[in-house]
Length: 528
Image 1: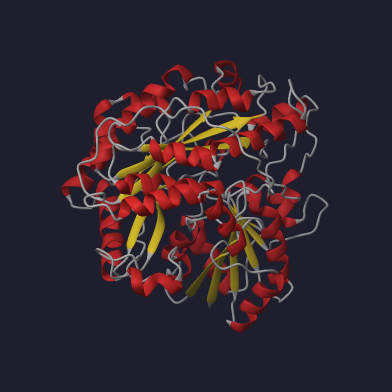
Image 2 (image 1 turned 135 degrees about the vertical axis):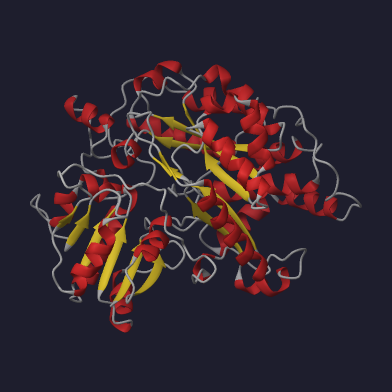
Protein backbone atom coordinates (compact mmCIF):
# COMPACT_ATOMS: atom_id res chain seq x y z
CA UNK A 1 0.00 0.00 0.00
CA UNK A 2 1.17 3.49 -0.81
CA UNK A 3 0.81 5.97 2.04
CA UNK A 4 0.94 9.76 1.83
CA UNK A 5 1.89 11.69 4.96
CA UNK A 6 0.88 15.31 4.49
CA UNK A 7 1.60 18.33 6.65
CA UNK A 8 -0.46 21.40 5.70
CA UNK A 9 0.70 24.98 5.64
CA UNK A 10 -1.56 27.54 7.29
CA UNK A 11 -2.49 29.08 3.94
CA UNK A 12 -0.66 32.34 4.63
CA UNK A 13 3.06 31.83 5.23
CA UNK A 14 5.54 28.98 5.00
CA UNK A 15 7.75 27.53 7.72
CA UNK A 16 11.51 27.17 7.25
CA UNK A 17 11.63 23.71 8.84
CA UNK A 18 9.86 20.43 8.05
CA UNK A 19 7.85 18.72 10.76
CA UNK A 20 9.40 15.73 12.54
CA UNK A 21 6.21 13.68 12.80
CA UNK A 22 6.28 12.75 9.10
CA UNK A 23 9.80 11.33 9.26
CA UNK A 24 9.09 9.54 12.53
CA UNK A 25 5.93 7.84 11.25
CA UNK A 26 7.71 6.90 8.04
CA UNK A 27 10.35 5.13 10.14
CA UNK A 28 7.62 3.40 12.19
CA UNK A 29 5.67 2.15 9.16
CA UNK A 30 5.63 -1.67 8.92
CA UNK A 31 7.60 -3.26 6.07
CA UNK A 32 5.83 -3.77 2.78
CA UNK A 33 4.39 -0.28 2.47
CA UNK A 34 5.74 2.73 0.59
CA UNK A 35 5.52 6.14 2.28
CA UNK A 36 5.56 9.48 0.44
CA UNK A 37 6.05 12.77 2.29
CA UNK A 38 4.62 16.15 1.30
CA UNK A 39 5.01 19.26 3.45
CA UNK A 40 2.70 22.04 2.33
CA UNK A 41 5.18 24.66 3.50
CA UNK A 42 7.79 23.45 0.99
CA UNK A 43 5.46 22.01 -1.65
CA UNK A 44 2.25 24.07 -1.64
CA UNK A 45 -0.93 22.31 -2.76
CA UNK A 46 -4.58 23.19 -2.90
CA UNK A 47 -7.51 20.79 -2.63
CA UNK A 48 -7.49 19.94 -6.33
CA UNK A 49 -3.72 19.44 -6.20
CA UNK A 50 -3.75 16.92 -3.38
CA UNK A 51 -6.66 15.01 -4.91
CA UNK A 52 -4.74 14.75 -8.18
CA UNK A 53 -1.57 13.69 -6.33
CA UNK A 54 -3.47 10.92 -4.56
CA UNK A 55 -4.94 9.64 -7.85
CA UNK A 56 -1.68 9.91 -9.82
CA UNK A 57 0.32 8.03 -7.19
CA UNK A 58 -2.29 5.37 -6.41
CA UNK A 59 -2.31 6.32 -2.72
CA UNK A 60 -4.21 3.94 -0.43
CA UNK A 61 -4.04 5.89 2.85
CA UNK A 62 -3.39 9.53 3.74
CA UNK A 63 -2.16 10.65 7.16
CA UNK A 64 -2.56 14.35 8.03
CA UNK A 65 -1.11 16.00 11.14
CA UNK A 66 -1.80 19.58 12.09
CA UNK A 67 -1.60 22.08 14.89
CA UNK A 68 -4.56 24.35 15.64
CA UNK A 69 -3.41 27.19 13.38
CA UNK A 70 -3.28 24.77 10.42
CA UNK A 71 -6.42 22.78 11.12
CA UNK A 72 -8.80 24.66 8.80
CA UNK A 73 -6.50 23.95 5.85
CA UNK A 74 -6.01 20.38 7.08
CA UNK A 75 -9.77 19.75 7.10
CA UNK A 76 -10.18 21.13 3.59
CA UNK A 77 -7.38 18.91 2.28
CA UNK A 78 -8.78 15.88 4.11
CA UNK A 79 -12.19 16.51 2.56
CA UNK A 80 -10.63 16.63 -0.91
CA UNK A 81 -8.79 13.34 -0.34
CA UNK A 82 -11.87 11.57 1.05
CA UNK A 83 -13.83 12.71 -2.02
CA UNK A 84 -11.50 10.53 -4.12
CA UNK A 85 -12.45 7.50 -2.03
CA UNK A 86 -9.13 7.30 -0.18
CA UNK A 87 -9.35 7.07 3.64
CA UNK A 88 -7.79 9.76 5.83
CA UNK A 89 -6.42 9.41 9.34
CA UNK A 90 -5.74 12.64 11.25
CA UNK A 91 -3.64 13.28 14.33
CA UNK A 92 -1.78 15.92 16.30
CA UNK A 93 -2.53 18.18 19.27
CA UNK A 94 -5.71 19.73 17.86
CA UNK A 95 -7.35 16.51 16.74
CA UNK A 96 -6.43 14.86 20.04
CA UNK A 97 -8.47 17.45 21.92
CA UNK A 98 -11.17 17.87 19.25
CA UNK A 99 -11.65 14.31 17.99
CA UNK A 100 -15.43 14.71 17.71
CA UNK A 101 -14.94 17.72 15.45
CA UNK A 102 -12.68 15.74 13.09
CA UNK A 103 -15.08 12.77 13.07
CA UNK A 104 -18.20 14.89 12.58
CA UNK A 105 -19.66 13.91 15.94
CA UNK A 106 -20.23 17.51 17.04
CA UNK A 107 -22.88 18.24 14.42
CA UNK A 108 -20.41 19.42 11.79
CA UNK A 109 -19.09 17.62 8.70
CA UNK A 110 -16.84 14.60 9.03
CA UNK A 111 -13.26 15.23 7.90
CA UNK A 112 -11.45 12.02 8.89
CA UNK A 113 -12.12 8.30 8.63
CA UNK A 114 -10.01 7.76 11.75
CA UNK A 115 -8.17 9.83 14.35
CA UNK A 116 -4.98 9.02 16.24
CA UNK A 117 -5.03 10.47 19.73
CA UNK A 118 -1.88 11.58 21.49
CA UNK A 119 1.54 10.23 20.55
CA UNK A 120 1.15 7.75 17.70
CA UNK A 121 4.40 5.79 18.08
CA UNK A 122 2.55 2.63 19.12
CA UNK A 123 -0.72 3.14 17.26
CA UNK A 124 0.60 4.06 13.81
CA UNK A 125 1.71 0.52 12.84
CA UNK A 126 -1.74 -0.76 13.91
CA UNK A 127 -3.47 1.95 11.86
CA UNK A 128 -1.48 1.02 8.75
CA UNK A 129 -2.28 -2.67 9.02
CA UNK A 130 -5.97 -1.99 9.70
CA UNK A 131 -6.12 0.32 6.67
CA UNK A 132 -4.44 -2.30 4.48
CA UNK A 133 -7.22 -4.74 5.44
CA UNK A 134 -9.93 -2.10 4.97
CA UNK A 135 -10.80 -2.25 8.67
CA UNK A 136 -10.02 1.22 10.01
CA UNK A 137 -11.53 2.06 13.39
CA UNK A 138 -12.75 5.54 14.23
CA UNK A 139 -10.38 6.17 17.13
CA UNK A 140 -6.88 4.93 17.97
CA UNK A 141 -5.65 5.77 21.45
CA UNK A 142 -2.37 4.71 23.09
CA UNK A 143 -3.59 2.79 26.13
CA UNK A 144 -2.16 -0.03 28.23
CA UNK A 145 -3.79 -3.34 29.17
CA UNK A 146 -5.81 -1.57 31.85
CA UNK A 147 -7.17 1.08 29.49
CA UNK A 148 -4.94 3.84 30.89
CA UNK A 149 -3.17 6.31 28.62
CA UNK A 150 0.30 5.05 27.76
CA UNK A 151 3.25 7.27 26.86
CA UNK A 152 5.99 5.68 24.74
CA UNK A 153 9.44 5.31 26.18
CA UNK A 154 12.03 6.97 23.98
CA UNK A 155 14.80 4.56 24.97
CA UNK A 156 14.11 2.43 21.87
CA UNK A 157 13.83 5.30 19.41
CA UNK A 158 13.40 4.42 15.73
CA UNK A 159 16.33 5.19 13.46
CA UNK A 160 15.29 7.84 10.93
CA UNK A 161 17.27 7.09 7.74
CA UNK A 162 18.37 10.64 7.05
CA UNK A 163 21.05 9.32 4.70
CA UNK A 164 18.45 8.08 2.20
CA UNK A 165 15.27 10.16 2.73
CA UNK A 166 14.34 12.43 -0.19
CA UNK A 167 14.83 15.90 1.29
CA UNK A 168 14.77 17.83 -1.97
CA UNK A 169 11.65 19.82 -1.06
CA UNK A 170 13.29 21.09 2.14
CA UNK A 171 16.43 22.67 0.62
CA UNK A 172 16.50 26.38 1.46
CA UNK A 173 19.13 27.15 -1.21
CA UNK A 174 17.55 28.35 -4.50
CA UNK A 175 18.07 25.86 -7.32
CA UNK A 176 19.62 28.52 -9.53
CA UNK A 177 22.39 29.14 -6.99
CA UNK A 178 23.02 25.57 -5.84
CA UNK A 179 25.73 24.59 -8.34
CA UNK A 180 27.74 27.76 -7.69
CA UNK A 181 27.39 27.62 -3.91
CA UNK A 182 28.63 24.01 -3.80
CA UNK A 183 32.08 25.41 -4.56
CA UNK A 184 32.19 27.84 -1.63
CA UNK A 185 34.18 26.56 1.35
CA UNK A 186 32.94 23.10 2.34
CA UNK A 187 29.92 23.65 0.11
CA UNK A 188 26.59 25.45 0.36
CA UNK A 189 24.77 23.62 -2.42
CA UNK A 190 22.12 22.66 0.12
CA UNK A 191 21.05 24.10 3.43
CA UNK A 192 18.41 22.46 5.59
CA UNK A 193 17.09 23.05 9.07
CA UNK A 194 16.31 19.57 10.42
CA UNK A 195 14.08 18.80 13.42
CA UNK A 196 15.47 16.41 16.03
CA UNK A 197 13.98 15.50 19.39
CA UNK A 198 15.96 14.34 22.40
CA UNK A 199 13.02 14.19 24.81
CA UNK A 200 9.30 14.84 25.29
CA UNK A 201 7.12 16.34 27.99
CA UNK A 202 7.10 19.45 30.18
CA UNK A 203 6.24 19.71 33.89
CA UNK A 204 5.52 23.45 33.94
CA UNK A 205 1.90 23.52 32.76
CA UNK A 206 1.73 27.10 31.47
CA UNK A 207 -1.92 28.12 31.19
CA UNK A 208 -1.88 28.87 27.44
CA UNK A 209 0.22 25.88 26.32
CA UNK A 210 -0.89 22.57 24.78
CA UNK A 211 2.36 20.73 25.48
CA UNK A 212 1.60 19.31 28.91
CA UNK A 213 -1.83 18.18 27.77
CA UNK A 214 -0.42 16.36 24.75
CA UNK A 215 2.97 15.03 25.86
CA UNK A 216 2.33 14.97 29.60
CA UNK A 217 4.28 16.33 32.54
CA UNK A 218 6.59 13.30 32.82
CA UNK A 219 9.84 13.85 30.95
CA UNK A 220 11.12 11.03 28.74
CA UNK A 221 14.52 11.06 27.05
CA UNK A 222 16.23 9.27 24.23
CA UNK A 223 19.63 7.77 24.98
CA UNK A 224 22.61 10.02 24.34
CA UNK A 225 23.94 7.46 21.88
CA UNK A 226 20.75 7.58 19.83
CA UNK A 227 20.86 11.38 19.52
CA UNK A 228 24.59 11.46 18.76
CA UNK A 229 24.25 8.84 16.02
CA UNK A 230 21.43 10.80 14.42
CA UNK A 231 23.56 13.94 14.33
CA UNK A 232 26.43 12.00 12.77
CA UNK A 233 24.11 10.71 10.01
CA UNK A 234 22.94 14.24 9.30
CA UNK A 235 26.50 15.57 9.17
CA UNK A 236 27.53 12.80 6.80
CA UNK A 237 24.66 13.56 4.44
CA UNK A 238 25.43 17.29 4.34
CA UNK A 239 29.10 16.53 3.68
CA UNK A 240 28.29 14.10 0.85
CA UNK A 241 26.00 16.69 -0.77
CA UNK A 242 28.57 19.48 -0.39
CA UNK A 243 25.96 21.31 1.61
CA UNK A 244 25.16 22.52 5.10
CA UNK A 245 22.60 21.66 7.73
CA UNK A 246 21.55 22.87 11.15
CA UNK A 247 19.44 21.12 13.77
CA UNK A 248 16.45 22.41 15.71
CA UNK A 249 16.04 20.39 18.91
CA UNK A 250 12.25 20.51 19.14
CA UNK A 251 12.09 19.38 22.78
CA UNK A 252 9.61 21.58 24.61
CA UNK A 253 12.38 22.49 27.04
CA UNK A 254 15.74 21.15 25.94
CA UNK A 255 17.42 21.70 29.31
CA UNK A 256 14.55 20.68 31.59
CA UNK A 257 16.93 18.17 33.22
CA UNK A 258 20.19 20.11 33.37
CA UNK A 259 22.31 17.14 34.43
CA UNK A 260 21.08 15.08 31.50
CA UNK A 261 21.48 17.95 29.02
CA UNK A 262 25.07 18.50 30.10
CA UNK A 263 25.75 14.79 29.63
CA UNK A 264 24.27 14.84 26.12
CA UNK A 265 26.22 17.93 25.07
CA UNK A 266 29.47 16.43 26.38
CA UNK A 267 28.81 13.26 24.36
CA UNK A 268 28.05 15.31 21.24
CA UNK A 269 31.40 17.09 21.59
CA UNK A 270 33.34 13.89 22.33
CA UNK A 271 31.86 12.03 19.34
CA UNK A 272 32.60 14.78 16.83
CA UNK A 273 28.86 15.24 16.30
CA UNK A 274 28.96 18.99 16.79
CA UNK A 275 26.52 20.84 14.52
CA UNK A 276 24.99 24.29 14.53
CA UNK A 277 21.80 23.97 16.51
CA UNK A 278 18.79 25.82 17.91
CA UNK A 279 16.71 24.79 20.93
CA UNK A 280 13.97 25.98 23.25
CA UNK A 281 15.16 26.58 26.82
CA UNK A 282 13.40 28.55 29.54
CA UNK A 283 15.30 31.51 30.98
CA UNK A 284 15.44 30.13 34.52
CA UNK A 285 17.57 27.17 33.36
CA UNK A 286 20.17 29.41 31.73
CA UNK A 287 21.56 30.62 35.04
CA UNK A 288 23.98 27.68 34.96
CA UNK A 289 27.34 28.87 33.59
CA UNK A 290 28.60 25.36 32.80
CA UNK A 291 25.45 24.58 30.84
CA UNK A 292 25.86 27.74 28.76
CA UNK A 293 29.52 26.87 28.13
CA UNK A 294 28.49 23.44 26.86
CA UNK A 295 25.76 24.94 24.69
CA UNK A 296 28.35 27.10 22.93
CA UNK A 297 31.02 24.39 22.72
CA UNK A 298 28.61 21.86 21.18
CA UNK A 299 27.46 24.20 18.40
CA UNK A 300 24.48 25.97 19.94
CA UNK A 301 23.85 29.22 18.05
CA UNK A 302 20.30 30.34 18.88
CA UNK A 303 18.16 29.69 21.94
CA UNK A 304 14.40 30.24 21.79
CA UNK A 305 13.25 31.72 25.10
CA UNK A 306 9.57 32.14 25.86
CA UNK A 307 9.85 35.32 27.90
CA UNK A 308 6.16 36.13 27.25
CA UNK A 309 6.09 39.36 29.29
CA UNK A 310 8.22 41.80 31.26
CA UNK A 311 5.37 42.08 33.78
CA UNK A 312 5.59 39.60 36.70
CA UNK A 313 1.83 39.88 37.27
CA UNK A 314 1.16 38.64 33.75
CA UNK A 315 3.53 35.74 34.20
CA UNK A 316 1.88 34.72 37.45
CA UNK A 317 -1.56 34.85 35.80
CA UNK A 318 -0.56 32.28 33.16
CA UNK A 319 1.29 30.01 35.59
CA UNK A 320 4.72 31.03 34.34
CA UNK A 321 5.97 32.72 37.47
CA UNK A 322 9.28 30.85 37.21
CA UNK A 323 10.20 33.46 34.57
CA UNK A 324 11.88 36.38 36.31
CA UNK A 325 11.99 39.52 34.11
CA UNK A 326 14.73 40.95 36.28
CA UNK A 327 16.98 38.12 35.12
CA UNK A 328 16.35 38.44 31.39
CA UNK A 329 19.22 40.84 30.70
CA UNK A 330 21.76 38.74 32.61
CA UNK A 331 20.66 35.55 30.84
CA UNK A 332 21.01 37.12 27.39
CA UNK A 333 24.38 38.65 28.27
CA UNK A 334 25.58 35.25 29.51
CA UNK A 335 24.66 33.71 26.15
CA UNK A 336 26.06 36.57 24.05
CA UNK A 337 29.40 36.43 25.84
CA UNK A 338 29.73 33.01 24.23
CA UNK A 339 28.35 34.16 20.86
CA UNK A 340 25.03 32.44 21.38
CA UNK A 341 22.01 34.63 20.75
CA UNK A 342 18.32 34.43 21.59
CA UNK A 343 14.97 34.32 19.88
CA UNK A 344 12.87 36.11 22.49
CA UNK A 345 9.12 35.53 22.35
CA UNK A 346 6.57 37.95 23.81
CA UNK A 347 2.79 37.71 24.16
CA UNK A 348 0.60 40.82 24.16
CA UNK A 349 -3.03 40.98 25.21
CA UNK A 350 -2.43 39.40 28.61
CA UNK A 351 -4.70 40.39 31.46
CA UNK A 352 -2.43 43.05 32.96
CA UNK A 353 -1.36 44.54 29.62
CA UNK A 354 -2.34 48.13 28.84
CA UNK A 355 -1.70 50.33 25.83
CA UNK A 356 2.00 51.04 25.39
CA UNK A 357 3.03 47.50 26.36
CA UNK A 358 4.94 47.08 23.10
CA UNK A 359 7.06 50.19 23.66
CA UNK A 360 7.70 49.26 27.29
CA UNK A 361 8.86 45.84 26.14
CA UNK A 362 11.05 47.31 23.39
CA UNK A 363 12.69 49.66 25.89
CA UNK A 364 14.01 46.54 27.61
CA UNK A 365 14.86 44.72 24.38
CA UNK A 366 16.99 47.62 23.18
CA UNK A 367 19.26 47.28 26.22
CA UNK A 368 19.95 43.61 25.50
CA UNK A 369 22.42 41.98 23.08
CA UNK A 370 21.00 41.76 19.55
CA UNK A 371 18.64 38.89 18.94
CA UNK A 372 15.36 38.01 17.27
CA UNK A 373 12.37 39.36 19.19
CA UNK A 374 8.98 38.03 18.11
CA UNK A 375 5.56 39.21 19.20
CA UNK A 376 2.23 37.43 19.31
CA UNK A 377 -1.18 37.63 20.91
CA UNK A 378 -2.53 35.55 23.77
CA UNK A 379 -4.48 32.78 22.05
CA UNK A 380 -6.89 30.41 23.82
CA UNK A 381 -6.16 27.02 22.26
CA UNK A 382 -8.80 24.32 22.75
CA UNK A 383 -8.70 22.31 26.00
CA UNK A 384 -6.02 24.51 27.59
CA UNK A 385 -6.65 25.96 31.05
CA UNK A 386 -6.65 29.41 29.42
CA UNK A 387 -9.47 28.45 27.05
CA UNK A 388 -11.54 27.02 29.88
CA UNK A 389 -10.99 30.12 32.06
CA UNK A 390 -11.97 32.55 29.33
CA UNK A 391 -14.94 30.44 28.30
CA UNK A 392 -16.22 30.36 31.89
CA UNK A 393 -15.80 34.13 32.14
CA UNK A 394 -17.70 34.71 28.88
CA UNK A 395 -14.72 36.47 27.30
CA UNK A 396 -14.35 34.38 24.13
CA UNK A 397 -15.29 36.36 21.03
CA UNK A 398 -14.53 33.60 18.53
CA UNK A 399 -15.00 30.31 20.41
CA UNK A 400 -13.95 28.26 17.37
CA UNK A 401 -11.38 30.68 15.99
CA UNK A 402 -9.40 27.85 14.39
CA UNK A 403 -12.16 27.19 11.87
CA UNK A 404 -11.26 30.47 10.18
CA UNK A 405 -7.54 31.11 10.52
CA UNK A 406 -6.87 34.84 10.90
CA UNK A 407 -3.23 35.51 11.73
CA UNK A 408 -2.46 37.82 14.64
CA UNK A 409 -6.12 38.27 15.58
CA UNK A 410 -7.43 37.89 19.11
CA UNK A 411 -10.19 35.43 19.95
CA UNK A 412 -11.13 36.93 23.31
CA UNK A 413 -11.52 40.32 24.95
CA UNK A 414 -8.50 41.56 26.94
CA UNK A 415 -9.13 43.03 30.38
CA UNK A 416 -7.35 46.36 30.17
CA UNK A 417 -7.44 47.30 26.49
CA UNK A 418 -9.57 46.67 23.45
CA UNK A 419 -8.96 43.98 20.85
CA UNK A 420 -8.00 46.66 18.33
CA UNK A 421 -5.49 48.16 20.76
CA UNK A 422 -3.92 44.73 21.31
CA UNK A 423 -3.58 44.31 17.54
CA UNK A 424 -1.94 47.73 17.32
CA UNK A 425 0.58 46.76 20.01
CA UNK A 426 1.69 43.69 18.05
CA UNK A 427 2.01 45.72 14.86
CA UNK A 428 4.06 48.35 16.68
CA UNK A 429 6.40 45.74 18.14
CA UNK A 430 7.14 44.15 14.78
CA UNK A 431 7.44 47.47 12.94
CA UNK A 432 9.92 48.86 15.46
CA UNK A 433 12.02 45.72 15.95
CA UNK A 434 12.37 44.98 12.22
CA UNK A 435 12.67 48.46 10.71
CA UNK A 436 15.75 49.17 8.52
CA UNK A 437 17.10 51.30 11.37
CA UNK A 438 16.69 48.49 13.88
CA UNK A 439 18.41 46.00 11.57
CA UNK A 440 21.29 48.42 11.07
CA UNK A 441 21.66 48.91 14.83
CA UNK A 442 21.69 45.14 15.40
CA UNK A 443 24.48 44.74 12.85
CA UNK A 444 26.49 47.65 14.26
CA UNK A 445 26.21 46.29 17.80
CA UNK A 446 28.38 43.35 16.67
CA UNK A 447 31.11 45.53 15.17
CA UNK A 448 33.71 43.87 17.42
CA UNK A 449 32.92 40.45 15.90
CA UNK A 450 34.08 38.88 12.63
CA UNK A 451 31.92 39.81 9.65
CA UNK A 452 30.15 36.45 9.63
CA UNK A 453 28.35 37.24 12.88
CA UNK A 454 27.01 40.50 11.48
CA UNK A 455 25.86 38.84 8.27
CA UNK A 456 24.20 36.14 10.38
CA UNK A 457 22.16 38.57 12.50
CA UNK A 458 21.17 40.60 9.43
CA UNK A 459 19.95 37.60 7.42
CA UNK A 460 18.20 36.13 10.45
CA UNK A 461 16.35 39.38 11.07
CA UNK A 462 15.31 39.60 7.43
CA UNK A 463 13.88 36.08 7.57
CA UNK A 464 12.11 36.59 10.90
CA UNK A 465 10.63 39.84 9.63
CA UNK A 466 8.64 37.68 7.24
CA UNK A 467 6.73 36.05 10.11
CA UNK A 468 4.65 39.23 10.40
CA UNK A 469 5.32 41.14 7.18
CA UNK A 470 4.91 38.59 4.34
CA UNK A 471 7.77 38.35 1.85
CA UNK A 472 6.31 35.66 -0.39
CA UNK A 473 7.28 37.03 -3.79
CA UNK A 474 10.22 38.60 -5.62
CA UNK A 475 8.78 42.12 -5.44
CA UNK A 476 8.37 41.89 -1.68
CA UNK A 477 12.00 40.84 -1.29
CA UNK A 478 13.20 43.57 -3.66
CA UNK A 479 11.35 46.14 -1.57
CA UNK A 480 12.96 44.91 1.64
CA UNK A 481 16.40 44.87 0.02
CA UNK A 482 15.91 48.46 -1.16
CA UNK A 483 14.86 49.55 2.33
CA UNK A 484 17.99 47.96 3.83
CA UNK A 485 20.39 48.85 1.01
CA UNK A 486 22.74 50.91 3.22
CA UNK A 487 23.34 48.02 5.60
CA UNK A 488 23.68 45.56 2.70
CA UNK A 489 26.23 47.72 0.86
CA UNK A 490 28.16 48.23 4.10
CA UNK A 491 28.40 44.49 4.68
CA UNK A 492 29.44 43.88 1.07
CA UNK A 493 32.19 46.50 1.29
CA UNK A 494 33.48 44.97 4.49
CA UNK A 495 33.42 41.54 2.86
CA UNK A 496 36.19 42.65 0.50
CA UNK A 497 38.34 43.92 3.36
CA UNK A 498 41.31 41.70 4.21
CA UNK A 499 40.65 39.64 7.33
CA UNK A 500 37.01 40.63 7.66
CA UNK A 501 35.83 37.02 7.77
CA UNK A 502 38.60 35.83 10.08
CA UNK A 503 39.64 36.49 13.62
CA UNK A 504 38.71 35.18 17.03
CA UNK A 505 35.17 36.17 18.04
CA UNK A 506 35.09 38.62 20.92
CA UNK A 507 33.80 37.03 24.12
CA UNK A 508 32.03 40.19 25.24
CA UNK A 509 29.57 41.80 22.81
CA UNK A 510 29.54 45.44 21.84
CA UNK A 511 27.48 48.03 23.67
CA UNK A 512 23.72 47.54 23.95
CA UNK A 513 21.61 48.59 21.01
CA UNK A 514 20.39 52.19 21.39
CA UNK A 515 16.81 53.22 20.77
CA UNK A 516 15.81 53.38 17.13
CA UNK A 517 13.17 55.31 15.27
CA UNK A 518 10.01 53.66 14.03
CA UNK A 519 9.25 53.34 10.34
CA UNK A 520 5.93 53.08 8.57
CA UNK A 521 5.02 49.45 8.04
CA UNK A 522 1.91 48.98 5.99
CA UNK A 523 1.74 45.27 5.22
CA UNK A 524 -0.57 42.36 5.74
CA UNK A 525 -0.01 40.44 8.94
CA UNK A 526 0.85 36.76 8.82
CA UNK A 527 1.71 34.00 11.19
CA UNK A 528 4.52 31.51 10.57
